Length: 213
Image: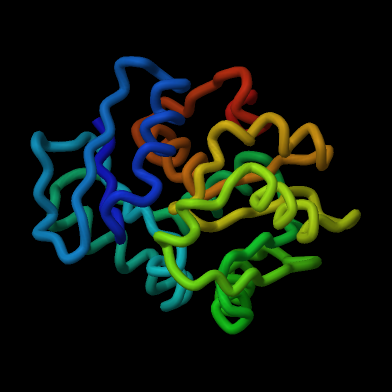
């Protein structure tokens, strides 16, 4: 079972569940919300702080400390969406990315700095400056595709979409095909990394390059 600490109730949980079903119909995902006492219905095998911005704003050391504290408190391996991006990029051998950010440009710059600490260069970025998680949860295929396309750059080896409220699972394969490179969404990397932490990185068709190798 994967336990996800999630910032806003009733936003993008269904996208996590849709992705989990594609990975393994028997895979269980449980959620605890902020503010939370880290309580799940059952003890998870791994837990991840499933929020991009709340896991990169204190830098790489802060993200690692955050995961360490969660692991100590819960007694299981702990990760976060931001750390998941680093693991996924290392898995793909990717060092240069384009960033399709939903944040204000200042927050986007903070994520660029976080990536740079880990040796990842951002060759281009766009900032949508969206008002809230709940607003982002209503974005459809066209808006997400337009954001990813605007962010893409010929020198980028992958495009990142770091927002767990977006419903991106149905777009994973199509976005990668359209842009000709991996498109790594927050939902996908969070689940992939949680399973990777357990020693079982999933390989599945139809979910983009990250899950195909």
